[in-house]
Image 1 (cartoon, rainbow, N blue to C red):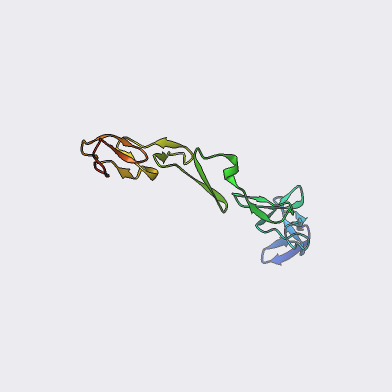
Image 2 (cartoon, one colour):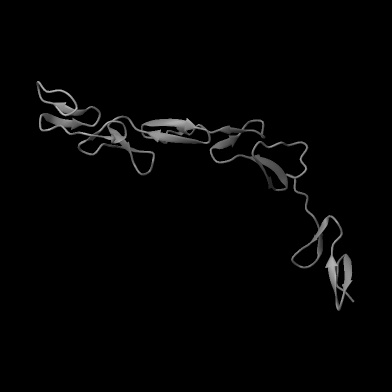
Length: 156
C-alpha cells in the first residue's frame, strides 16, 4: 500500500511518488497545482525593467534611481536634485546624482554637505595649497594667497 497522491512508481524494495504535469510536491508530500505566475507568459504587460507579483497581480517595477512612468511599464530617471539633497551643487545622473561644492569648499564624508577648506588650502575641492612666503595677509579659500601691497602671484 502506498501513500502517493497521484503517481506511484515501483522501485526495488520501495516506491517513488510523483505528480502529474502542472503539479508539484509541497512540504507535506502532497501534489498541489502549480500556481500560475502572472509575470510569466505575459502577453498584456511588457515591463522595461522587472515584474513582481503583489496579491496575485503582475506589476512592473524599476531599479533604484528610477520610477515607474505613467504608462505603468516604462522606467524614467528620478531627478534627485529636485529633492535638494545637496548643500551646494547637484548633478542629476542616470539612476543617480552627484553633489559638488563651490571653490573654497570640500565635500564632507556624507557626500551631501560642504565644509570650508582647511587653512592653507584653496580652490575647487580644496585641491591647491597656499605657499605665500610671508608676503601675504591670508590664504583665501577661493583665490589662494592674498598678497600685501606691491606683491602679486601665487606665492606673493
